Length: 139
Image (cartoon, rainbow, N blue to C red; front, side, top):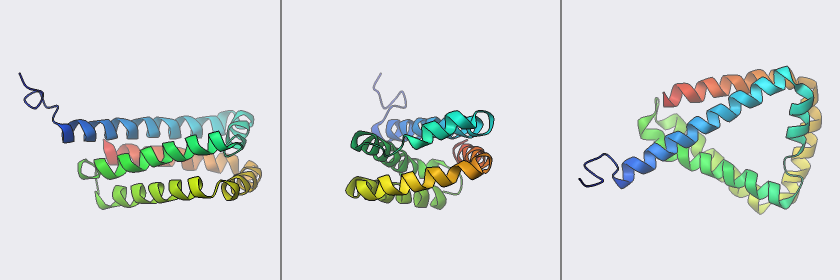
């Protein structure tokens, strides 16, 4: 039997992989939100590690771009298709900015994480809300 007959045509596999990536992103947001609420000290340490080195900066930007592309590729199979396309485009563009301006990213991350300490429970709730919204888009 051919791969296409089994439902593994190239576009279908690409969209399925994109949706799987979005499920992982939703799980990440859910975990981050829970940790921010239940274990705020660990959440602060985790978030403070972002953009501290060029390697971490590149990994963060690469993952952001991967999720952005997944949003764009899977948008036709999500609810409210234009919104995931816009979100994905924003993620891809912001990833490119992070890659092109690592110094600015480091300064912004440093300032943001210090201010975030004051509102970490709110950040956790926002992360949980985004996880639920993402789940709604792809379910």
